[in-house]
Length: 304
Image 1 (tube, rainbow, N blue to C red):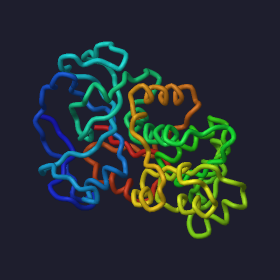
Image 2 (spheres, helix red, strand yellow):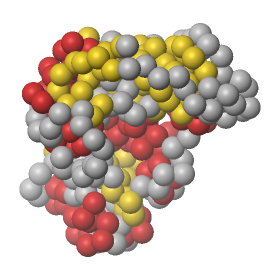
Image 3 (cartoon, one colour):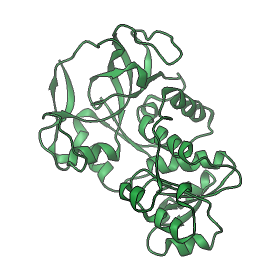
Image 4 (cartoon, one colour):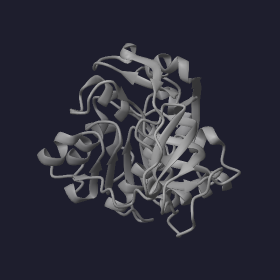
């Protein structure tokens, strides 16, 4: 037996508790991890709150981002390059129900963690990092572009903005004023979000692409600024995909290989991936309260 974050009904962070669950041996192509770090994401909160429907039986586990130590290996479990996964390997990636002491993960969603990558950073990279990669794979960005990134100080937006800067593009990012200096530090031109956004952005130049990682305000501004729908991508404003004809971020780029590239960029100092705070497993309610409220930029990570 081991412990995991669970909930018996949908609702706010207060529905979460830590309970015992049975450990299971991994099936072929899967591994059992001793979790060392598990990042929290807005998606997890939406699932817990019932905003995203689920027919999974209660009690439900929660979490997806993970970094951990391989404790058991199912037959045929290999990394993307064909190398066998071994007990004791330090890995990171994705595992459903990762906010726990132990969790089973698919080998196809894991990569070997670079030794120089801090475990708390690795434990929060899959969702934010690979969603950002997916945004740029959906609407390729280049040095001739001026990109508006909505929610540029958030988990996905901050990575997407930096990846866009790395292409040579000019990047304008929406954020609250308290986060403007953070954006400037990575080469992003900050602009305050909210009413009048299109007018403020128009004063900075012609936008050629929009990545919205927060809601639909940047997408609506893009429409007002004449950005073609096929040069805009949304990850949160699902209704805008149909209403405005913009892209939803494709999923093919969400691979362990791309995760490793992001990790190399973090280790080399080319990509900033901040961790705002860490919490022990027993404080999972406080951790999700921080995610659901206003907190400093960066990931909230549970360290079981």
